[in-house]
Length: 160
Image (cartoon, rainbow, N blue to C red; front, side, top):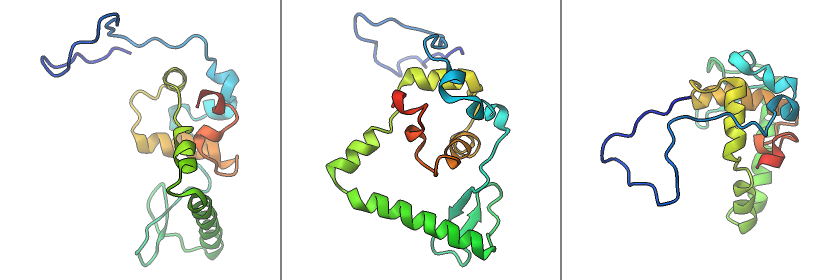
């Protein structure tokens, strides 16, 4: 992919010893298909969405919404299940909230640039918005793994 040119005077010159570049190269040392498997590759082209993809709109009369179309969820079984998932996630975060352990966990979820580039090339993510990455990649990929964080997926963990 070719990078857009910087506007004149908008950025400082790179330090001595660095090299300018106008193109990104796919990392050859990461085989995304082998690392993540075919389930992730199915996400290419926005062909997948999570089966259980809901949002919580606190303060709304109908706070549970479907992520895809924002329609209210009315099925009591779905509401009960999602409320339990929400409570479990909040309890997990509350256990370490405002602690060095929580900060370390969050830093540990950062992904290496070479992995992100390999993933972007493999799935052609260049024009995707953040919400599309979440809806069509992160949620479907993590749903089958107990709704873990993307960085906690077995194939992703080595690159965090």
